[in-house]
Length: 246
Image 1 (cartoon, rainbow, N blue to C red):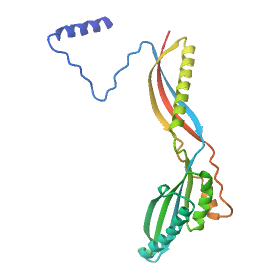
Image 2: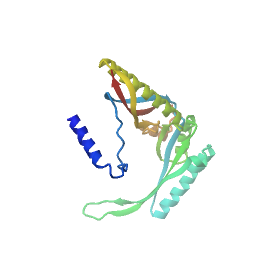
Image 3: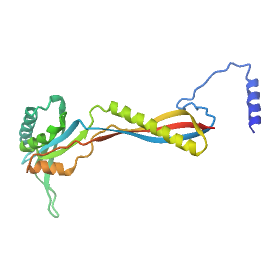
C-alpha cells in the first residue's frame, strides 16, 4: 500500500509540472510535527509554595427605613463612619473600592392578600485590600465596631505570583521528564526528544472562600480576631509530548 501511495503521488506531481506550485495554509490547523518513534504524552503538575501577602475583606452596612430615602440616608451615614475608620487605620485609597449598592422593598405576606410593602432595606458594601495581613484581624474588629454588619473574609492571596509560577513550571517539566524516563526504561526504550509542551492550567495562589467562623467571630467581638496566613500552593499543569526510541 505504501508503494502504491507513493506512486500515485508521484504521478500526480508529474501531471502538475506545467502549473506553478502555490503553498497553502489552512487557517486554524496546527502543523503536524513528524516524529519517528513512539509518542508518549505526560501530564504533570508542578508545585511550589508562598506565604500569602495580600488579604481582601468585603464589609457591608445594612439599614432599614420606612421609605427608600430614609433607608439610603441611614445607610450613607453608617458607611461614612466605616470608610473614615478604614482611612484612619491606614487603608490606602487604591485599596478601597465600592463593591455593591442595593435597595430593596420589604414585604409583609398574609394568606389570600397581596403583599404589602412595610419598608426598605439598603445595603452598601466595600472591598478592602491589606498589604499587611497581620493587621486584617484588627481591621475586622474595627469594621464591626463602626457599624459594619456584613463581613466576608479575609480572602488570602499572593500579590505577585509570577516568580512562583515559573518555579512551578520548572518543577512540572522535571516531573514530566522523570516520568517519561520511567516509562521508556520499562518499555526497553529511551527518551529521544521533547516534541511539545502545553500549559493546561495554573493556580496562582488566588483567594479561597473565607471560613465562616471568622465572620461569626468578628461579629461577636468577644476578643481580638487573629488571622494566620499559612502557605498557599502555587501550581502549574503541563502536558509534555516526548518521542521514545531504541
